[in-house]
Structure formats: structure tokens, C-alpha cells
Length: 109
Image (cartoon, rainbow, N blue to C red; front, side):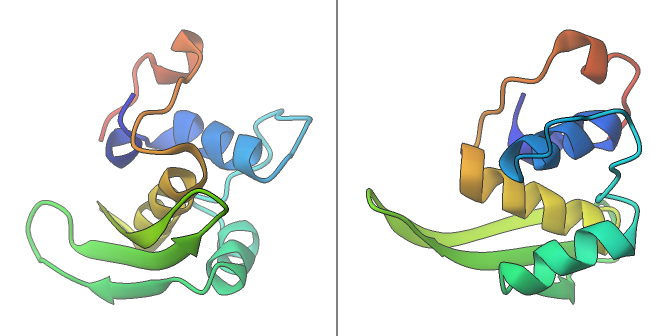
């Protein structure tokens, strides 16, 4: 699944995987809970801005750097947290994320 299409449980699962949250029982919801997603935004030094008032009104961006490469990542979402968590996942897992099928059924962008 494309990182820029992740939402709901699938997005929260991907963030949990990036953050080494080993017991994903549905209580970890950083894409909707500022108490969980906010510290990730702060730690990763993300920029969040209102971008477009139509399809995806929020943009999150961050600079990432690891042993093999570096660059700027931008992701969009219906909420600031969705955009930010997509950005975080893309920085850790790339543009394509392998998500268990049962987590993607019935999800809406």
C-alpha cells in the first residue's frame, strides 16, 4: 500500500511498527490522538501547514537522514495528524508499505 494512502488502523499499525510498539492492540492511535502523535511530530521535527482547502488540506514535511540516503519528505492528509503520521511512516518504511490485509479492509482515505 502506498504510504500516502494509509489511514485508520492501517496507518496506526505502520506507525507502531516504525516506533517498535510491539503490542498493537488498537489502543495506539497516533493518527487521531495528539497525545500519541504529537510527540512523534516534535521528536521528528516535522513541519505541518494548512496546504489546500479541497482534497487534502494538510501537509506535513520533514528532513530525514540515514546511512544510505537523505532528503525531504512531504505527505498530505485530511487532518494534520494523518499527514504527519504518513510522513513519519514514509521516512522509515519508504513509499510502499506492506500492511496486513485485514487492516486495510473497509478503510477510507
